[in-house]
Length: 190
Image (cartoon, rainbow, N blue to C red):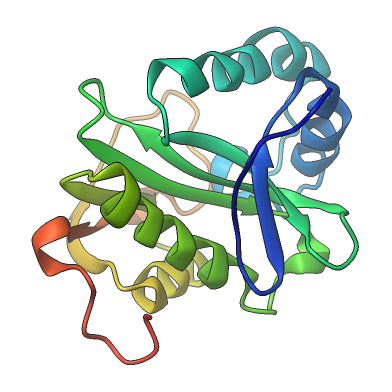
């Protein structure tokens, strides 16, 4: 099966997911540190990845061209590193930036590199009006990526969860960048 490449950066290749990526996604979500700020460290069950998550990812490619979720591979190795996303709003005019990388890819600037490339793609190729991202307020690493990427802090808000994970009491944060603000003027964002 051929895999369509969305874009490449100096160190990353972002490609469409395929049905063959179940093991990659299950392995990524099996790391408690990767899932710490998402599920409190609980892995995503294989059945959920195979029967729900991956089919939803694959269906979005045709529904909202240029937006969706892409597998991230190392350009030099071809190894699976995680994923990056521009999940579309209902009307496709906005994209929610997201990323989830294997722990061995952390601390190397790859989340920022991939996110910057997706911002450029969102505004210059797809033409969305807004890109936004959310995380737990206590997730300092993800917040740093958002800021380095050029998104600006918008708000802190609180959601109710039936089974909250540690840190939930501090709320969620939202960052954004509007097309009218592209390219961002923050140092190092281009």
